[in-house]
Image (tube, rainbow, N blue to C red; front, side, top):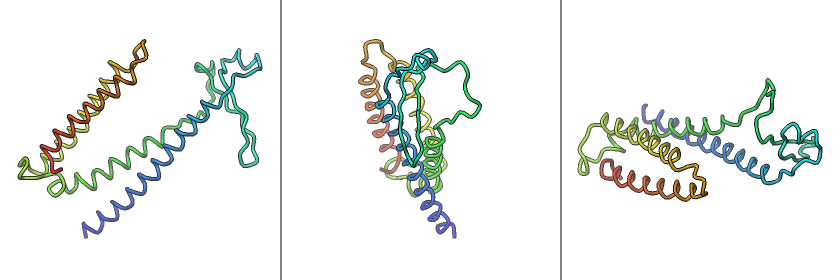
Length: 178
């Protein structure tokens, strides 16, 4: 019965993760397009309010006029929409899928007694440790090298992150079953 339930959980979490990732990527593409399509407003009133770009668009019979402020306006509306749930749900469904697939069956999928003998509990703790260490290393790379005045930040962060991924994969393949 447990295998049956895990199979359904796997299927549902996979689809939930794919759908939320599509929503996240879609909203990201929309905002990239929006940023690239904004034009500087001609209206002095908008410029005085801090509007750096605007766009007129039509969709579904309605007219839209999104405006981008260069800094936060003096007063934010009470009903401010934040586009963060797509990313949160993608992360949460991905972690839940990781839990169902690997952590729940750590003895089968994470432990290779020939490579590195350990218990399933040790494998779960090591996998979670890898995730936490990865986040800490990536966070430190971004904090220390992410905002350079000379514009080399993307290259440095990209190279250091790539090196960290290679090191982490090498270490993980010597500890876990790869």
